[in-house]
Length: 182
Ligand SMILES: CC(C)(COP(=O)(O)OP(=O)(O)OC[C@H]1O[C@@H](n2cnc3c(N)ncnc32)[C@H](O)[C@@H]1OP(=O)(O)O)[C@@H](O)C(=O)NCCC(=O)NCCS
Image (cartoon, rainbow, N blue to C red; front, side, top):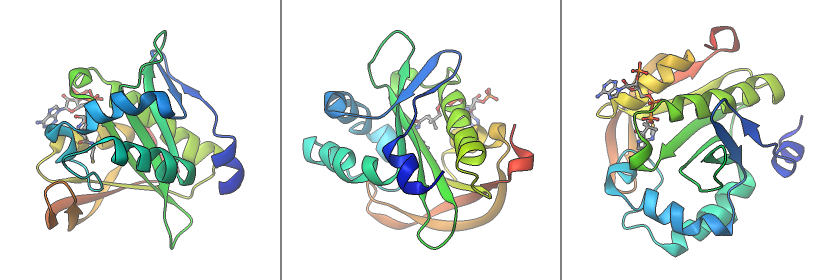
């Protein structure tokens, strides 16, 4: 599947309890509520703070069409409770996994299940040779999510965090090989 085809015909993905679908205009309020929360924003690289309607529209109009991004919903409800996606790398034939959940939904295994579905799509359907990800050292919950999927640490580095206005946040770089998918 080519990048262009897969982005245009992005399939819905399902897990036992979740349905992952393309984010749309009706999600704007839920996106602002979730990502506008400092507790979410300070753990992400590319999210400004404060976060408003213009930022949610930028996400829908620029990020969603050019990346494999899904809204996370609970089966039986169309409400967006988070997002998960693969950002194509500019210089390599691979992609970086990212995800966030609205705070009321933390701690129920949702991020792991959603990310597992997206990782399988990336490795099995897109045939990515491997998938990268990373997390801030002070966010070990995300490290645990990646570990549960089979990602292993490849390096320690610093990364930018738009919400914090810093470009030197200590981070862990991770990588998942197809043979190590859990
Ligand atoms: C990171 C995030 C997506 C996790 O979502 P979640 O649905 O709560 O994650 P899960 O429940 O699937 O898994 C969390 C795991 O971390 C573990 N955990 C929780 N707090 C932890 C801590 N302080 N240290 C280590 N592990 C921790 C949980 O026990 C669980 O592991 P287990 O299943 O082995 O018990 C969510 O907290 C979030 O949206 N945070 C803000 C945005 C963000 O951090 N995105 C990722 C950026 S790299």
